[in-house]
Image (cartoon, rainbow, N blue to C red):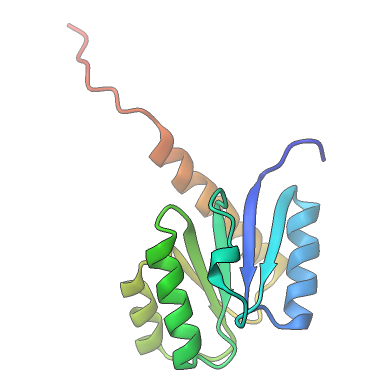
Length: 135
């Protein structure tokens, strides 16, 4: 594919889900970067469009990192994913400002649907408002 659909960062992804997700995103034309939980969140490129953050056990360390990312990179939308998480914790993530939550395991179709929703959202945000009235 010649055009880049966008830049996505995978954070804290387990080996199996990371490999599959990475391959799908690359196949769909996205430029993909990976950052581990132990790596400095400053490694996240500022020109990224979307960040997919996997909560492996919803630890306080993971939650703190996600919160720092949301605060330090306000122009990057964050999508959280986790295998087992309570509704209470999903609401806590929403308060951080995440764009979307995808429960795991997720199918390629669910990932594609989230990307389409993200694309529609960003397209809507980029549309200039037409405040003129034709008489």
